Amino acid sequence: MNTPPILSLTDLCFGYVPHAQVLRGISLDILPGTITAILGPNGAGKTTLLRVILGLLTPQRGTIRLAGKPQKSFSRREMSRLIGLVPQSEYVPFDFSVLEFVLLGRAPYLGPLDMPQESDRAIAREALRAIGLEHLRERVTPSLSGGERQLAMMARALVQQPRLLLLDEPTSHLDLSNRDRVLNVLRAQARAGVTIIFTTHDPNLTATIADYVILMRQGALLAAGPLEATLTAENLTATYGIPVRVTRVDGQLFVVA
Image (cartoon, rainbow, N blue to C red; front, side, top):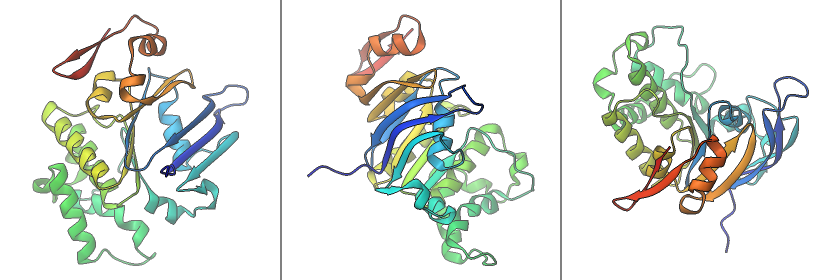
């Protein structure tokens, strides 16, 4: 019996201005509990695709189905319980402590005037522990480094307890130690049944963690499929427009321009 996709896109098109398509005819299925990398150069449409999936942007054409239902049938609260987003960066106008900032992720489970309960705080503390920020929980977010702020945004998404987690360049501001920690957290989330989709322009990051790969260039889908079959020299050369070599080092794919 085939596993139904948690996300299905059919002939998806989007443009910020008329007659200038940023996404052009994207069709794909994402299976639950998998890790998928959306890989491509700057300007390929990767971030725009995440925003369309999340419902922040409305496509001009095409359909989006989440967990078998049309995206438009979900309320904003239902969407926030289903999908979590970790953006590349975010402006925080208030001096929230790290713990308060992460607790914002529990909003989909609270009423308009409800305050977080101890159970919500326990979920937030566990997310901070997993991501390595527990010792900074009383720090105000504006005082965090770029990498620490990125980790805090990831912890906030984790406390939403989403079924689908979207991440935009999740390791772009991280050192090697925190990069490794984030990848381990993502693997643990996938083992628990959460579906992970992340954008990147780094094919070697993709080779490290992804089960499936989506290759994009100029808003179009060039290739999509399992890691080994998709992350090839031919496909990557077409994606980046330069000669690319794919080798294997200690059993893992390694990409060299």
